[in-house]
Length: 303
Image 1 (cartoon, one colour):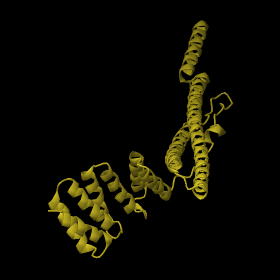
Image 2 (cartoon, rainbow, N blue to C red):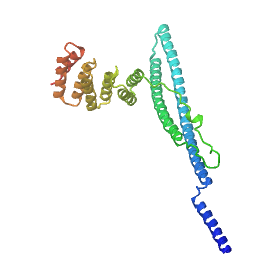
Image 3 (cartoon, one colour):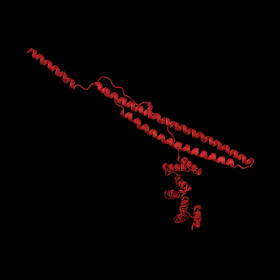
Image 4 (cartoon, rainbow, N blue to C red):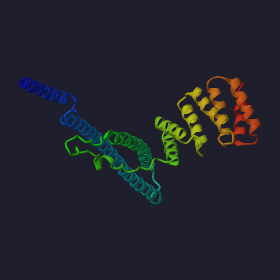
């Protein structure tokens, strides 16, 4: 009887041990391992962000160097133009000789300087776009590690797992860059138009209208788009551009010139009826103006 009691007691002890093991919480090692893996993922995100920022910063620095070099070249060209002007004036004052070679050289230098200034303006605009992109990337990437950073739960071992925070270098602000102004963009476009750099002028005029659709020079920019197309003998495109001046900027002083040039474009396309109608409408709307007088002359030459 006593032996039976001992056997039953021993069996109860073993059953209690097995039940306690089954009901015990998971090992602290498993929880710690999950936290370490999560922290390693956060560290990798931070490293990727830092690599991305380093790559973008290097490209940004290269563009800044290019703009500085372009500015220096423009300064040198300006000095050269001043020197040539002085030489030209001295030659006229002293000898009155033929200065056509000097004039031609000055014209070439002036064209090169205008082209350089236009390119500097476009580089400045591109840098402003890159600046905006950098700020957007920085805001998006910087927010990800902050949201993913885990809080260290109690592992049951009496200690807290180490937490990772975002490095200070990852939130370093990007220096601001002043974008190109509307007046500068328009001036560059007119300079390129006068220098017959038509493709560059067209892009700059389109950029002005895109960024400053209600700007004080919007009507002028639209008119010059028509002039560009006319100069390149794209008369249908010129008519469309002039028509936008007439319709969208009715109070602009460019309306009468646009109507005159639109009529001339119709003449170039052989559409004499449309040309006559445009010239007569110009004379009716703007009587006595130079454009109206020019329209009357055009009408006299049309059969």
